Image 1 (cartoon, rainbow over the protein chains, first blue to last red):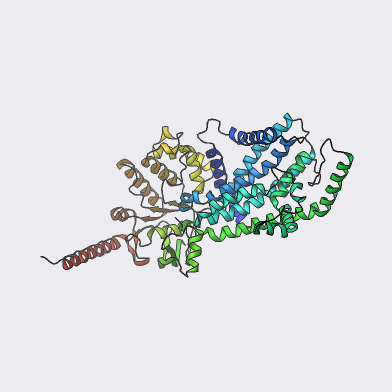
Image 2: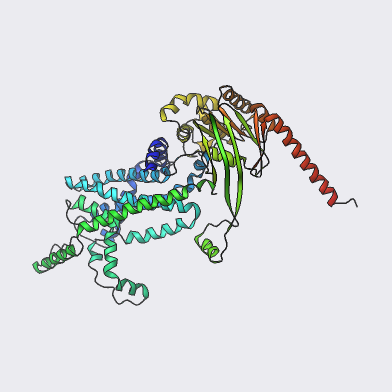
Length: 307
Length: 260
């Protein structure tokens, strides 16, 4: 808590670092800040090509589904990617003068929150284009963002501190993020994983492990703050705050199929009740933030003595 | 009331054998029961007090702990043992010209650097013209710092630092920065600080400048205080010691290489 007060006392540096981060990211590019908007747009364009044109996915609102999941993911992965340089690149500043070192990971977090804000403007513009209606449930985006920001901050602080002493952290992080992306329902709907009953013909120890722990792993998958945040965004922006487990039958399904889909949805919702999972994810996010901050503070005194 | 109090301060560094930069190396070292580093005391039980307005020179050979002492006073480093207190706004003139971002303009860097040294945006705004004037960089302030020469960067760093209105100045080997003209100018600025009654700590190998700026000097050798007296006495004794040491080196050389 005292650290938070100290960061506030030194907010001038914090604000200057955030401004610098924002300015430097697109320095030397002709379009400058427009890239904040163009980057997510172009990524979405790639997916449009891959999923809609190559794979012929035809669900209604499929692009809106992708974009809403991608925003929180982009924020999270950028923050984590930036974290490994948060301290190591600021060594000249650290050796020059005293300031609360916590400012460094906080500045990374704030810079990326601002980028998220820009990307959100793109999203609203697209929604205008697709004639999606604005409504009060959009506000659910705020708690979802706080949840993922706390989680990202905790990881960012500990990775920033460890990177000073071990260069390996950077490479491990890059690869783990690649895996994590697929362990988050960005490109596919949540119920794809929830509905998986078994691994088809497991024939090595990884697959046997997955098979024998499937119910537990699915619970962990849902309680992951990233899953909750992504589904929180979707629920807020696309489904008017509705429960995030949805099973919809195809448009041309028979009444029997529709009834089966509804039954599945009811049973999944009973199996994964929303509230406990949201609370669980919030506890994980807060705990990560606190632990990350403790690790960072313990290491911070030795930063100036490194390299 | 003293401006600076240093009580029995010790500072330990770990000096890695081979810099461990990977988890695997670290894990292997632990398995083999190696420590992977030497412990090394950069400062060993240093104590002194400084009154408001005093100017103190820190002299001693390389590796005697001078820069470590300044780092501790600037709160960049923490003492391993002992306590220290520094009253008022400290302005470290350490690592001048570092901490500038090459892609940002001189102007943007002035604001970033000043905030790092503790000025608010408005305070910087008020001093901005004077900072640019002192650095003599008027027409370059809107160009990125990566286009500056080394001398220009250091001039800007010095100029920002001396505009902080500090109570305590920490000066690490910056007496000889820039060209002849800027050296005179910056030395003159430091003399003004002295007249204004600000506390100063000067680390330098330029003993003549230390003699002019400081009335008191502390001589450090391998982390221990050898002398803490008037600067003229300390400098004379230090010079004598260096000469004696060089003579003994020369004698050893002639002894080891007998005339053939």
